[in-house]
Length: 193
Ligand code: 5GP
Image (cartoon, rainbow, N blue to C red; front, top):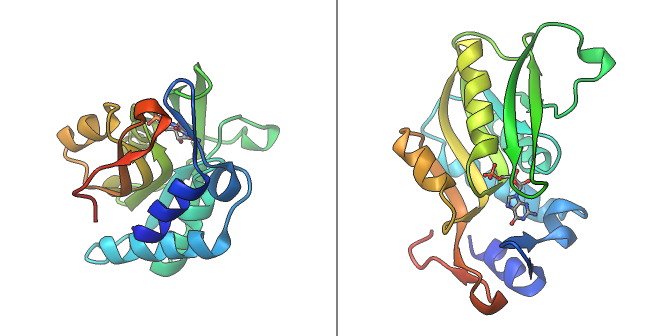
């Protein structure tokens, strides 16, 4: 997705630990026009599927998942990272190790919002080691729902998540794939769409 690639080149900052900082349009300030276009692109790429629900994790995936859900005209559900007092109801939980925060946390989704037989599309901002998506897949499994695909805004192709998920048969669509941050320069994979 050329619009996204140009924006990453213009505003992305490579930090230590192979972390890409894109706070000016994805992770802190969000560009709604770009987020809308990203949602539309996911809709186009998965338009052959009958989706019941889009599922993501709070916080950064929500904007892109919301616009995707908007185009599919289905609900967006986001997994919560902290179990608040208002989540004392029945929930599906999974443990996720955070690549950026270097700690494990629990994600949960109320049993009221994911049902057996639901056809789910996952959406997230980044794919690194795949832990976040594996947690969401685990929750979908517990609910008896099926994951039909996953839309990723930025895949870091030099980390194992993409391979792990594709090997599990997950249909993965990444809008850009980064091959390396050599000398803090962002190198994109040539064969991305
Ligand atoms: P994974 O679970 O695939 O290891 O990591 C995905 C999650 O970690 C994403 O939801 C995202 O929030 C965060 N993440 C991983 N790599 C990066 C990165 O390079 N930059 C930013 N901003 N977030 C990242």
